[in-house]
Length: 278
Image 1 (cartoon, one colour):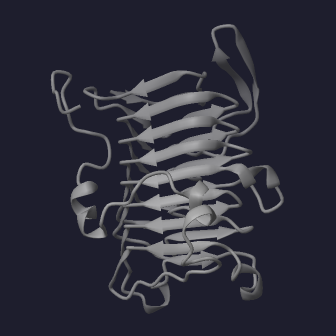
Image 2: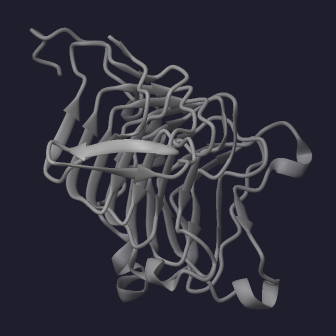
């Protein structure tokens, strides 16, 4: 099933998109999914790719309401002041802006079991360095495979609390995990395979801050597997436990040696409606 939208698909609260058993593809040169001022959303089992900008048009967001939309960014999934959002077992690639962006006070987000490829700015979490309402953002990024053709922002964080756990990073061109404005980043049990470029071995990147400023940011690596010269620059209370990382700790990490098997089923599942596996 191939869906090319004329305008953004505006989600309502307490809704699920479930593509299991139907091989759903959304994008294909049209706008994609927007989660704005809504809560309790699940997006599962779909392929999202080649998403373009939409807008400057009237767009319906419910059976009873429509309104004028300015130009969208062209994200695969745009989360704007959304809460309790779960993106699971999706395959994402080649969008105009981000594959998944969450901004403007969005929180309680889980991004899990996804397969991401062929994209520059993969994931932005936090609107800007002046939008302090994102200081309460909490995001879990777990069991994803960051694959070929990715450049940066896996994720790129502002303010907030971010648990990056048991993901497989098999390619990046600039860096894997970045941030600004003092986010708390808890990296546990991931596998990072650095590119061959000797200038791109570092997993982490701090943006728009001097070392004297970012050295107090709480970024730690625990149990990560660093391969091909990859290295993670920790800072702040890097060795701390307990309260420092409590809001950036959503589940117990498995050993990084298991990441290959944990992420082997990442992405949209190839299954049939009658399959018990799905």
